[in-house]
Image 1 (cartoon, rainbow over the protein chains, first blue to last red):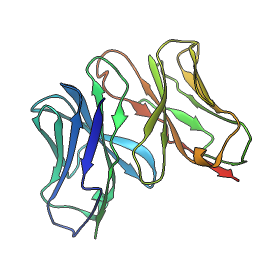
Image 2 (tube, rainbow over the protein chains, first blue to last red; image 1 turned 180 degrees about the vertical axis):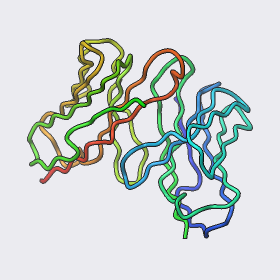
Image 3 (cartoon, rainbow over the protein chains, first blue to last red; image 1 turned 60 degrees about the vertical axis):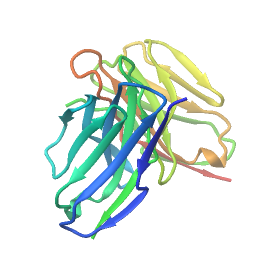
Image 4 (cartoon, rainbow over the protein chains, first blue to last red; image 1 turned 45 degrees about the horizontal axis):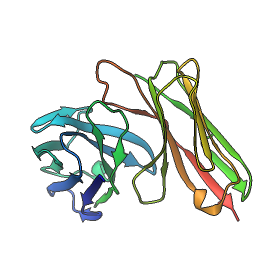
Length: 112
Length: 113
């Protein structure tokens, strides 16, 4: 069966510090991968999606970037965090050709 | 852009009551999904709908894909305390950027024991 992991679960970072959040998927190959941000417990906003290694599409201009160094690994990064980057970050995967997305457990980021 | 109007925004019910929530859109979607999110966790898929008019059940949950492809509802029968959480609908349009789901803003469900 397929599983999705996110690391870390919680992170507190100072403004201006770098960020690296990791998402890994097991039990499937060549998945589509997604990064979402959720503010205040509602409203999932799609940040990035990837249909293959090295292929990243950005949905909204922002202070963040994404990379996909391996087939089942998706990284969310920032060089300098802003206060507004605080939120709950969710990674999701779907099997190519199928629309259903499955979410990871999320990372709660607090920028102080 | 595409929008899904999800209602109600929140519900407060007594244990044992039935619940109904729905999503509507001005656009046609080819797939409707319903998720539940517990506090501090990622959304979990409850039901996936792929055909117009499709009615699908998952235990006490029942969801339907509207005939016009512009709406969907989710019913929960005989609610229990663990039904508490935020319920999201999500729709997908085929063609173009067919990887991207459009999410409703969620229905917050509170169940009083």
